[in-house]
Length: 109
Image (cartoon, rainbow, N blue to C red; front, top):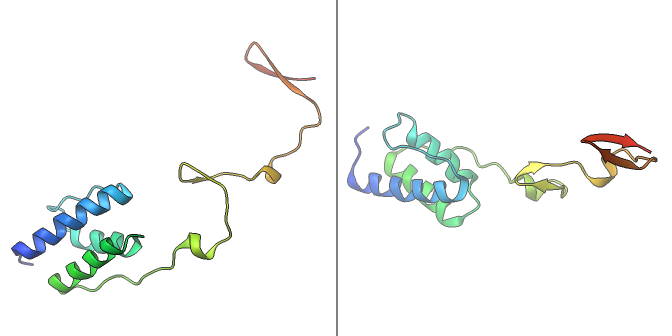
């Protein structure tokens, strides 16, 4: 595929937005850079990023991957800590005895 100035400009803008939003580092020299950018643009929550993805797909003549609904919008709310799922308070086993720390060891009293 021949890279023209508008394609490269669009790819640079999209790469900058994807890196800021999702933390993915995509190099323009990668063989599948366009496919990766289009996939991440579809998953983006930002409207401008999705619009840049549509523009890139039109410029390159490739199709956008199928849009998947956001899991957070369809699922029930759950506890997350730094992006990882954590157990809720009810899922932890209840300790009947008190726990103390003695010289780095747990002591059940």
